[in-house]
Image (cartoon, rainbow, N blue to C red; front, side, top):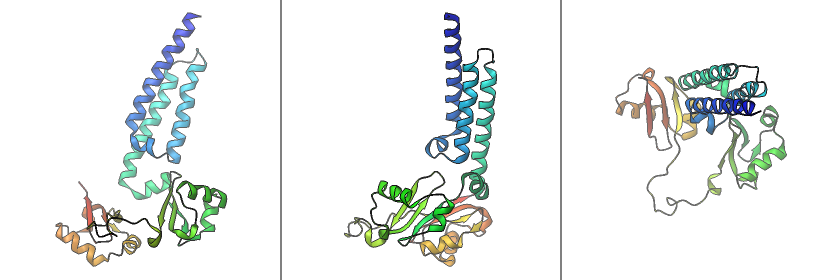
Amino acid sequence: MLKEIFMHTYKTLILFSVSLLLVRVMGKRTIAQLSPFDLIVIIIMGSAIAIPLEDDKIKLSYGIAPVIILSILNYILAILITKSRKIEDFFQGKSTVLVKNGEVMMKNLKKERITIADLLVLLREKDVTNINDIEEATIEPNGKLSILKKRQMQSVTPKDLGLWTTEGIFPTLVIDQGNVAVDNLDKVGVTIDQMLKELNKKGIEDLAEIKSAWADEEGNVLVDKFQ
């Protein structure tokens, strides 16, 4: 009896330690935003770990090996995702607009299999009670809802009161892997000429040098160049 308890304790400690180490290696992205791929990895890892715990005849390595393999795959995928937007879209999925200018996009709701009732719950969780107040509501790949209220419905800021000099606008991706995202430029109201002038100021003459570039509504451009 004591021998069985000792073996179960030993296996549990080993598997817990290995799993904790590998989750730390996979990075905070996996913990912070659970994508479909991450969810599958966690489910399979849990099942693999349970196998040697349920049957004493099964070697401990049979539970550790699949966990290590899955962690390596997840780590490799995380690296590939940072290098290619297409790979990221394939594995992580894309954001989907559910509400645009106060209008519910029924086609997109059906595509994401979200009911009106589900949408209302998500909006209430964001303290939104009137759909007409929304400029854009988007369901992210991790299942979270991002909301941008119409300008007139947004909270008063220090800038509105003349107490601040900058808007603190979140930058938008305008260049990805050397390719210009024209639609995103339109969103922030920045022309291609403005962006090119900013890039020239930074000593960049060829878009192929740029891994990613972000712009705000004031025309400021942040650049991440290829190493």
